[in-house]
Length: 585
Image 1 (cartoon, rainbow, N blue to C red):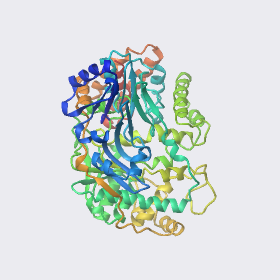
Image 2: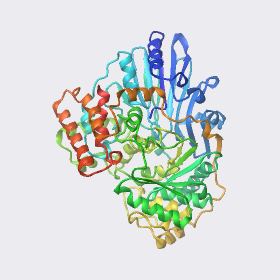
Image 3: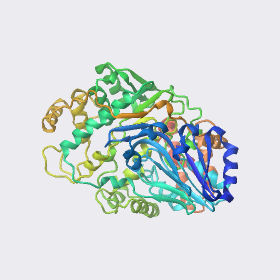
Image 4: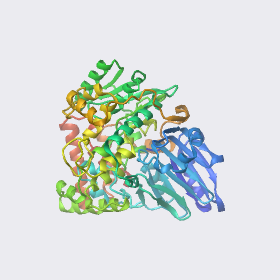
């Protein structure tokens, strides 16, 4: 998402790195730090000095959330002012941020534990780098005469037309020399190269067996506390993304319970037929609770620059086009309900072997798929036979980047209060006979009614309001759930402590990433332009079966856009997947 490039270069390579950066980036986006033995650290980020505190040897961009200490730290000053205990354990923190901390020998690069801020790493002779933009790392390798070899097994596996293949399966990417860093891990750049640092996000799953009712009640209070902090920020316009589903309903319920909902503007997409149900329910909610609603309709979005933004930010790591390029982010602080999939389940509570059987892929594709996904599971310490292997893989490789894709390209300032470690642990707890736990027997507690309970505790009337589709929640269910959960909560006045200010966080991609993307984008945001991009890399595929699979991906993209009539922005994974082949060129 191109919020950061960090390169640690030896004395003999630093000049080449700095010359390449200077050729493409604006000076205000570049900082250079002297390290031991003539090595240099080159940092590239929008208005980089605003995020840099040289005396503390740190760069911090975005905001961090500590749900245990109930603290939110925004921007570099907010981070430096945060409690020491929070700063000493950054890997456990939520929010959305990129951070670099250096010493005389190198630099540690990390981000929020969920991976909303994505991260990749690469290295070569005398240098090591980390970034959230695959395009930036690919062109850095070109500039330093370092090879970039297509990984055709990984590329073949990614042609599976399933959401599992929308993001990385593990450390592999389309380029052998560029590695994806699963959620939770950090990267150390020093004379040894770019080393991945433990622990992965799956370490959050360790702990005592949680009690259902007390955990859900505590989490609901925490969700209200994080939202209360955002709604109380001076000088910002909170924008709450709503849909017709359950997840965003929890956040709306929290705003209503705080008695602060009027401070937020509800935002709903209505840009395709698939959004009609969301828009209908959003209007109903706005009328019922007297709230402002902004509908993004067909023709309301100017997609000029969308292709460049995607190339600079998501190409190669997420097969989708991310945030609308014309979204106004100045002065805004978003709020979303994304995150509940990590405990109610997304890929289905099943072993990876069962997922393979259910997908029933062609043999050659299946072998590549297994090879890459096995690497990913091994990286996060999960066995393919585990009955929650699919959801652990989702947590480490897709949940965060899928969440961040909707905003990080333009601004890290979106709160996702449902991203909570206590709920992730609860969702994975083994099923037990307990009248408080909702739903039918199953392997794990995780279930959509677990999310409904959060909304019920916060604002029962909002929880019982209509949904886009039948979710099994109505006034009678709400009443019964309140009885077993101990009654509705009073969270008025709840708000996490805040350090820092939203105005201190620079917004937008670096000039380096945008300049590289603009030099490569072939035209307007249209399928022909995406096809032109992809065909640049198609001929670099040596194996005919892999080329044929990507031509099938292209045909799927054409079918979605031309025959189904879907807007390109909402035409699924195929258009972006084919266009990402440009990174091979």
